[in-house]
Amino acid sequence: GSDADTAKARSYGRPGEPVNKVYVQYSNDLEGFLPYTLLLSEEGGLEFVSLAASPDFAIDPLNIFRAVRVDYDTLMEDAFFRTLYSSILSRPDLAAESQLQDQGAAQEGPPGAASAVADRVRPPYLALVQLSIRRTIYEGGQVLVFVAVQSDLLATELVRSCE
Image (cartoon, rainbow, N blue to C red):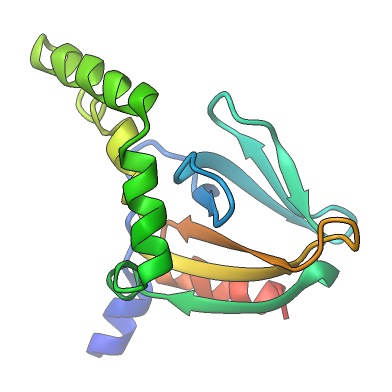
């Protein structure tokens, strides 16, 4: 195959992870990228089931007015995203959690155990989709949702399902 075929087939998933595991970051919160499983359905739209302590949520495709592929490195050149990234890293609770994870990993923790805090600012999957979502009339404006998926093919499929 060609280089383009190889790029389309590239996968960032970790062994043993479900194919529909994604990492999601809202532009209006300081949690960072958190793990979810993503279910696409006609009735429920995009349903995100949390794999952490965060709540489940759904996005109605009718509220998505733009879905585009975005490159992580390009995202990091954006002043707003860099500020968001710095704010997440400077949270005292995450700094303490990161230290504990580093100590635990040094003591023989399973591989990848120390990556949870790092994943919040740089998701393990580099295929990113940016969703621009209309907020309710009461909230006003829009919010950006960044979804990191396991392959370029899945990213393309997610963009297509939001059109």
